[in-house]
Length: 134
View 1 (cartoon, one colour):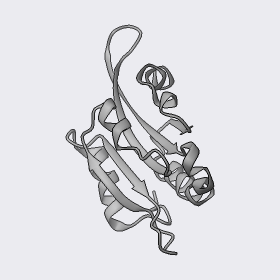
View 2 (cartoon, helix red, strand yellow):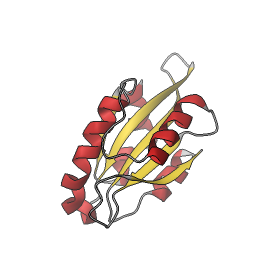
View 3 (cartoon, rainbow, N blue to C red):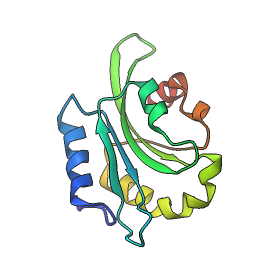
View 4 (tube, rainbow, N blue to C red):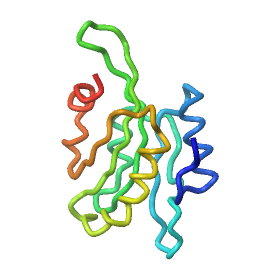
């Protein structure tokens, strides 16, 4: 698997830690204000669903890789990684700038099968994400 273009070494390392460690379940990337096309690592941590929603800016786009813990319909505990393109109403003009990174991450994270674009916080409602993952 080759490294995605437009991602810093720090970002690649964060994604690797997400794959390997339980204490990391969320990685958030942002585009810098400079002409540099590389995505910057904004946050790497172990966030609850509520903390994830609070970490998202209301008027700026972001790329998020998040491991969701949920119960299947049968009641077993499951985990699924999600790739989310966050483009709130105030950040709509930023969508084009994030699309290349989103596409590169989809190729780099082949084991992630749930990809979505969220424009409002209710698009990231926990039960909706669990249904998509499950």
